[in-house]
Image 1 (cartoon, helix red, strand yellow):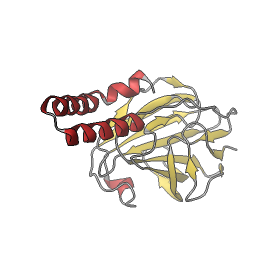
Image 2: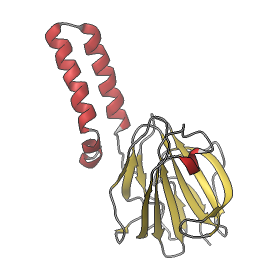
Image 3: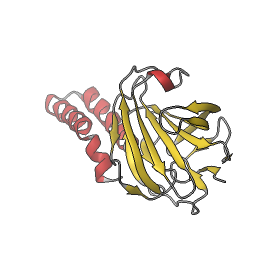
Length: 210
């Protein structure tokens, strides 16, 4: 667990600890139990483990922990303005919510989009929900990554900016409490996951670039 990740949850931890103190002072065992359970949940949510990162410019790793929700061919008309393969990953509240760069390269685009807070499993969330769109220009291709809020996750936190050079697996941001992350791949890429697969950010190989 890293300080940067913990810092994003500082107010949540403060409230939970305050509840525990109040419960102890007033002798309310039920409040102490609730505060302990909430504290354990928060520690689990804000965990940020180091993982071995597969090498190779052609190797694309998952940008998030979660389950592959869909793999579709779609027009990416914001940055690349061409047809792509999109791999969508659903993150539950029990997944690590730190997003990691799927390839090494330079951040060339970053744009916030206000929107709704539909459930991240709703197909319409991809176009209607609040989101942050990134583009990373690598040695073999430029990939677009989209962080999307959900019904519970309502805050996207960017830790990088346009012009930054990132290594594969670099922590570039996080989404708080259940959400969706999308990776837009060139049509020439070979996708190596299928719908329903569980992936780990920065570790699971989701595609290989031509």
